[in-house]
Amino acid sequence: MPMLFEPIEIRDLKLRNRSVVSPMCQYTAVNGVMNEWHLNHLNTFGRGGFGLVIFEATAVEARGRITHGCTGLWNEEQLNAMIPIVANVKSTGAATCLQLAHAGRKASCQRPWEGDAALTEIEFSKGELAWDIVGPSDLPFEEGWLVPNQLSKSEINDLVDTWVKSTNLAIVANFDAIEIHSAHGYLSHSFLSPISNKRTDEYGGSVKNRMRFTLELVEAVRAKWPVEKPLFIRLSTVDGKEDGWTLENSITLSKELKALGVDVIDCSSGAIAAAGINTLPTPTPGYQVSFSAAIRSKAEILTQSVGLITNAAQAETILRAGQADLIALAREALYNPFWPLHAAQELKADDNFNLWPHQYGHWLGLREQGVFARRPGEINN
Image 1 (cartoon, rainbow, N blue to C red):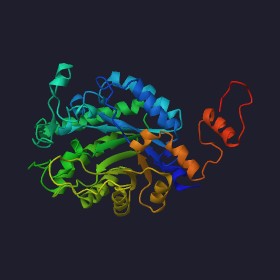
Image 2 (image 1 turned 180 degrees about the vertical axis):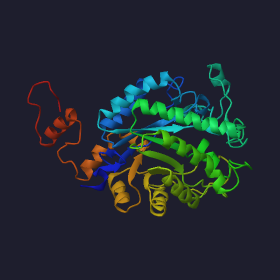
Image 3 (image 1 turned 90 degrees about the horizontal axis):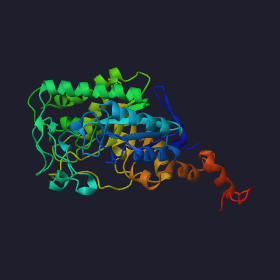
Image 4 (image 1 turned 60 degrees about the horizontal axis):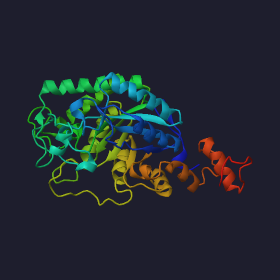
């Protein structure tokens, strides 16, 4: 059996294979509430054979949304819309994970296809107004963007409580896992990076102090999240900017996270700031694999690799080389939601279409054998 299709157990959760749908914002919610688009979008990946489907970045409070179209989980309406979607995806055999997030200083902006920048009069005319945003320091992400209000210590404590409340709601929604978003310049990441965190109190300055918010957040969520269920965290393992957060910092943090009960480090990179020279690797196939390999080896923790992993042989090689334990796909999953099932064919793990939903696999198996439908009108070709 190819390693990609070997089940993996993380705490009490057993994934049917090691392919994961990376969280991808759809910017289609209304007041944070998921809808039919999210149901169809996420269910397709379950039917497509993925082992784990991570729901998109979901804000723990209204001001934590990236855009007006982002999902949230801070009230009953959002919870009630999410419950049937979780159940629907799980009915396909896939496990579900919720990425809990707070956009921090990158909140209150346009949807990507509307400009991907600060809100303008165009949005205001539609009733989509800006809101006050927060961060570790009063530094905007980019010139022309909103300036965040620097969080006080009491506000930091209140925010941690907000994450705990969303964790409680995720329990009710029956998710199998949670992922804390601490990457891509959003709130937790912005505390970690010296580029965005200029504080002089116990939440700023040294690496230890800059890790404090993330560690307190993880400790609080882990204490509430059921012990038998896995906890993931997504890191920008490097800032890719001069004098920014480094891979060595991520290894140190990952050791601390493991001690607090984190099970998987989801290894991404970058997006801390628009200004400055970018020192990230050129985006080529598997360009972030070395990050997951280093953290897996040096922190001795499970890792998930993501970033231009597009074909089955590539994914299998990463796993067999011990560079990651899980393989996450984003845009490739959008392009081919049935990627795991096609990968199984490519790796000779499913010659008879047995891994496919039987409503599909039966007919595909007959086609492979050159057999047409036995009853007129059942299928044309």
